Image (cartoon, rainbow, N blue to C red):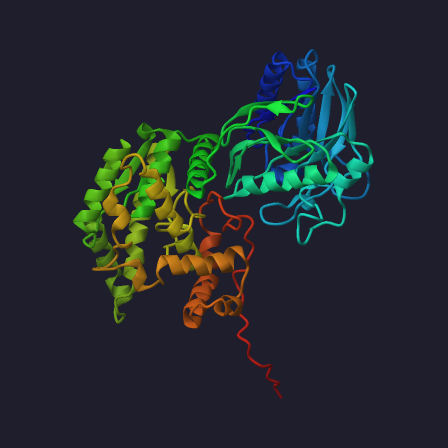
Length: 554
């Protein structure tokens, strides 16, 4: 019994394009002797389809395309295809998240997802009704327990606090499943594949069942999918794994328990680099852009973003724009030009001194009686943002913003200035990780000039400015932000960990008051467990509890 796992890159909404990916993969799997072909979750629609699922015409069209696909693949092996099924009942959510079996030219069986995640980036309860877990596929004398993504993420013995009361896998085992098939669209985060393999391994051992798991790869909006489709034997031993961050067709032989086991680099630096490159490439391509541009400041953030862009789109499709002000050091200009030479990208220099003077002259009456402050610094950032957006419009090139997660967390960025753009490439990468990836990138040759890595970070918006004039050292800042943003710790918990009280309270206050900026930021590629994207749902207008006693008023 041979199962083919189609590790494909669907585009959300592209029904015909996704059907072609499935058809091509299924035909190749048939030539390789597959008895069953399996696609990722919602593969025909693309994941996440979000509110496209609310359009009846989209769902109707997907089933018309599915029927055409069944006819085209009539002579090949059966194919499990992920899509959404209308809920015909008069109560409940409008859809089911399902796998449809295509066999001999027809849709013969439907398998429904049981557990519907509503945390982080997921909101499946908005659209889907949970299905029954007793869904067995009988094929060639085998009984396969078909489940979809979240259904395998609720084992009571693995998780300290399971999210759901039901256990679909235990139910499939009771129904007589001999093998588990899991169809997933599982987004990448740092270290997640190691967690998947450990979790699936323990699940296989517990139920004494082999598990085959197929995951899509590619980028859709802020999410990146790493593929790495896998198979484990009943003892939990991994015996097949697809390539990471690329398309793959993983053939799994269930009788001999053999398959290709791709090597991989699970270091955080390598994983994040590949995720950023893939996410940038797919965001640009799927949004219809061939070229990108970004501002080059001579700093580490724009340097890493430029390196990602050159790898993702090709060096000939990247423009780096230098916009020196009177406060820009010659070293920053020289470093930017050296970086561009290392990457082989085109540059353009647009000095902003005269524009700054024009702004100052025009604003002088409005600013009369006020001291110079951060306002003038923001004007510089907004001048640069306008120049970059103008070039983006004129050349139909996607503008990449270059701010990192640490800055976005505490609002160390200018709305309508350096935040202007269509994709925030490293907005989920903490500053310390930016440095780690840059050093990793230079492991064989100097890509990012050493001077950029070793100099003190600065926005260069006033003479002698450094980031640490206003922020704690980045290694300290990132530790506090990790506990607060990703671990959900409050100030008292972080202080109890040994951090300085005044520093903690100041950082958390900065995070709170910067919410309105983050709400208006460009989409950013998610690489950590908690990003400032669709999974971050903090109110803008709010007050912080300070521990004061209630005061009665008369």
